Image (cartoon, rainbow, N blue to C red; front, side, top):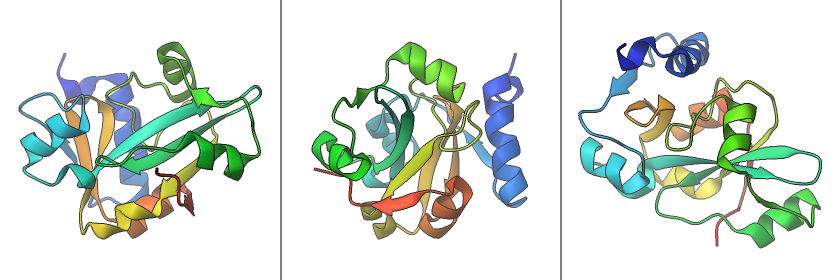
Length: 159
């Protein structure tokens, strides 16, 4: 089965196309499991790779969209959300909440809905690349449209 026929990729693609018919998926010639891998394959700066990181609290989940060259700050997230018990979601939680496996978590097309924060440092780049449901599949988008397609709240969430 080709990458584009996988359920998770189709779900991401549907969300992307519903937003803008002109956006398209890019199947990479080598894995983009990490931001560094993706940047090498796409020949772009690692900061232009969008990391979609799921966090869990005692009663909720939320997704953070962070530049590939930055780290998400747990302390800032705790302040923003008002939650003390906050940690990275487990691989199982990521799969059940988003429908994606780690390395291919798209910022769109999730199984469940949760609050999404986007870090303002991503707006340094003209083009951003985000996973589309599989480690070898991405889509290109600009900051304004990424913020819009994800209905995310802009916050400073990096260390």
